[in-house]
Image (cartoon, rainbow, N blue to C red; front, side, top):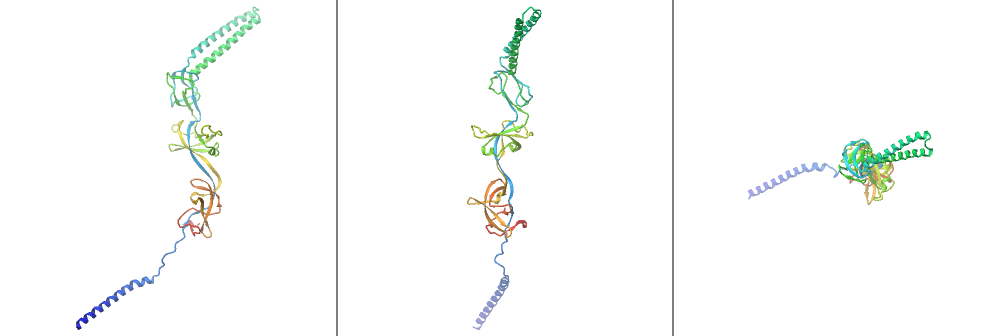
Length: 366
């Protein structure tokens, strides 16, 4: 009995010792933490933002259009009389000089004109010879003044007939021999030997060796922004070319209601890249605002259809939401018609933590 009681006392003493050791260990772990009093959350720093002041500048809005390339000087060659093509002296792509023979057209009139010319020439020769003989008689008193005057009139009439026949023959020859009116490149040669042509058939197109021209059409609104001397940019296969407007029509096309505009490209344009008749893309100024108040286009945001910006009070470094009236804009700048002045400071960076009254820090210590 006594042995059992001793064993129970030993067990209780061991449990007490173990409990004390556990409490001591827990005390070592918990007490230092309780002594280190940290706050639940550190204070958040004011957001850093970028600002700018509105500036005065021009804003231009460009519109893309499609134009057609033409030579500055171009001649369309048509036959002056119907006939059969007997010779072709040129082909497309060749360079010709003014007066060079392009082709020959048998108008069936040259032989007749030549016969008339020969006949008129003979009549004139005979009239002149007869007048020469009668001059001798007239000098000797063999014929009257009236008779001699008749021989003189015959010579004048024969001369007139000859001049008329010569003109007709020369015309028929010119009708037959088609020559280049200007120097340049033959861009089209639409004829072959034995072709039957009329006065309505286009034979050749000759482009002068001057600059290239782009023709395009615009609405009345865009036309009002264009004037002679304005610069344009033309694109063909990704290659840009510069030019200047040379002509702005003030009469609308009856079919389209558009106004035709022409622009002359720089002389250095490669003709092989911008051939006559090719289509190009071009850009013209469709709207323009001179010396207006502007801010970066990303500074403006919209809420309920209204435009707003955030301005910064430089003394308090706080933000304020300001409604503005905007106007013309491009990819970088937007016109401010009202709501700001050049003395304001406008926020150009955004973040979810920014709102009316937010205190901020300026990037770079502005």
